[in-house]
Length: 271
Length: 271
Figure 1 (spheres, rainbow over the protein chains, first blue to last red):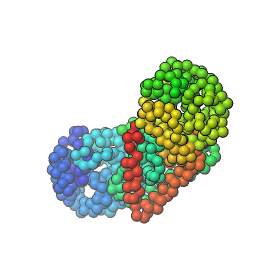
Figure 2: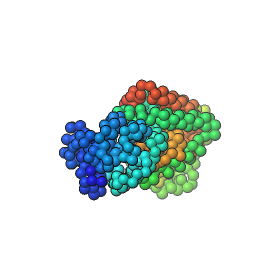
Figure 3: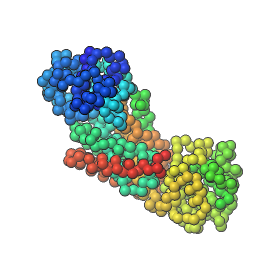
Figure 4: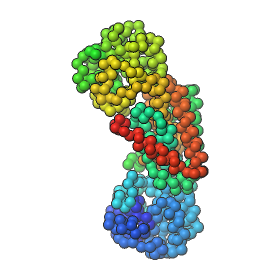
């Protein structure tokens, strides 16, 4: 792997570039983005040069799509028309079924692997790029793949987890989308109450409610069924609690929840 | 106010004693607790001496009940039998209606004010007592009261908020009990899912799920109706989200939630 093209040189794309460099990658890294983003990425030293998408698709050993989901879906047909014989295409979209279905129609199966690096931070753009962003984070791939790209993912410190697109989307509906929506719903429910009587627990539980809708619109639009199912399970859990409150109490629920939480915070999740 | 008796010299009672001293209180502070707790409180320098409950109730200018809710409810009739003419009784229970109703039967109305200092930390016992525990925290009182006790609450850095018992319980059902139960329910819902695909959001949202049931049993038992109502509102909010997901999207919910959260984090809540 000598030639890497990154489409969308923002936080994720830029951090991937910096991480590759820090891990010893000495090939070329080009950016495919708007002029403004390219200017920022060049001045941050994140990329060596810029290229148009069709040219990059024919030139690169690895084409990494690090844009918002909707943009990735729009680019895939264009890539299919100009992809080189040895180019592997991957992406960083937070949902996988829609993207993988689109790729299935336009890119040879052996030349595409869906990806989801489970990393991020509050700030955006190439100026926020951080070579250690993926360290100790999970990087989901939608299939086993013996391309050197996967070795580089490990070399930059990420933990590869293979989940097919549907399994990924069902899983993150629970581990990522549900926590976001629960935080938003909790904030809406508590809205209007005397907030001077709010404590640290409420502050923690509504932190995610600060998320911008723009960051979530594509995710929600491309994963509606798993999210609907997860919301249904959450509603059922709260409904069962109401019953138990009037009945035998919630000891079992508290113990099960605490056990789950202790299992959650393994070295992989401790960031 | 020269004579303070603290029943239950754990984290809250002990911190109140230390906070009074730090704020310049130079009267006597006695503890009413089990021999073991008294020994710990004496060796931590939290109290000057120990006294039996009936004696303390007759002697003190202020009798502060800082035990678990159930224990406070058990003690109130005993206090009623031996209370002095000038003793004000207050408490630190996390729910107020049950305690205030019990007090109403056994203690003259002018000699009781319900209280809820909204402070705490992970560790318990007099050894964890901290004179700054109440600084910038809300201290709910169930009625206006011009006893010097209220001045001392302010002098130790707390913000007094007057809410009657029912209003308090309805409020904390939303601001404290609901966040706890939502975190527990979320952890139960996500239990069994591939946790390697869990991120920082899930970790934040399930932190409260580590709470011990023993700390919550009395709270849930003494506030069932407001909690049931709050759970019902949360279920309705999640149900509305399911509808909106299939419809116009969640922009409005995200914006409302973010606005609520920004309002929540005022200097009083930033701890």
